[in-house]
Length: 469
Image (cartoon, rainbow, N blue to C red; front, side, top):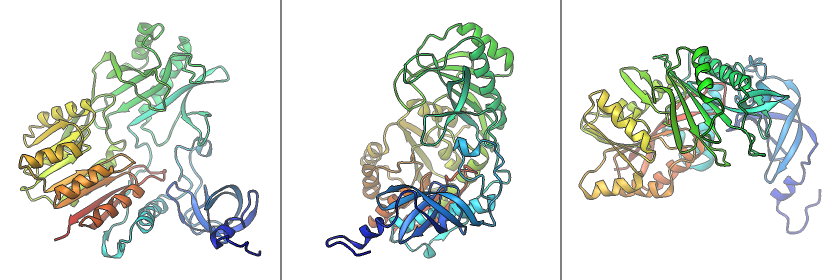
């Protein structure tokens, strides 16, 4: 093809792939969303369902600027790690992305996702970093302690589940095999009772109906469980009968709560919460710690792997008993309490006031007197404490998927703790944040991937970052 004047080679290579085109493709690695990644005519092609090492026939579904999205027409040479997914609605649902990959293959792929993020966003040589293999689960099923199932109608029937990828089609989930079985049971009972009593699912388009979401959280160790009925308005028809029916069908239920969310939003929870039956909070145990969990409080979704994640954070903190530690994004105080015995003092903060109250109560319940919790943002509180003469030796961060915001990074670079322990749920933002910190005088010393969500493409990672001397 003759290149037009003023057109770059890269642009011309983009023009060589067209929608509907078919070609053989070798999959080189796994992408951040669990898809296969291959290269055709120097253009990146992402293929959902394809695995590293496979040779496939690919058909281009979409062209998106510098890359293409494809689909598998035929697998010419399957991966040794390819298995039959055990879930009957695996492809429809989209909640899991990797059930067709052996668990050993998932753990290798997740380490490579972390590697790719650092190769893309930093110039750090990972050969000079303690980069460990992914910590996995012995039994990588039935691990989720919380479910949030959207409620809807399908062919006159009340259903509850998740939306199919890139669509507004609600998939009914009666037996999700990555959920704790009790969450499945509760959802099925509540949606059946809602149907029996004509408590209508909320219709976002028409803004009619009541019941938006059924949220269930289970204590793996305690057996306590809470049902949260997220509604579009305060009044639930026949609410007393509804609650009595739930109690009759689920006699061991610990707590039934209503959360009111009248807004047109993708967020599950609204601002107002009312206890309809039982306790406001449930308890969960992890090792020697016991946690009180209110409906909106953040708590890790995989309690078995959470212990391994927090042990990795403890190892990265390298505490000797003399350190002042900040637990930013502290939630209900789990990481801080995990580290408290090895620290001189823990100070935690979070913007959700209910979480701070839970954190204070959790510290008090365990007789931990060196942990203190405040509501607010770390970027405001750290400089205030610095002015008062309180300087942290270690800062532990466990941010949302968006990572650390720029103002907090600048705060860390000004305050200069000796060590930063970064607990990440997004390798891309981890790599970007580590790059910014490394340009400001820090060095990445260790990376420990942890598989918190088997069968999905998500990977957590604990990074140890130290101030250069």
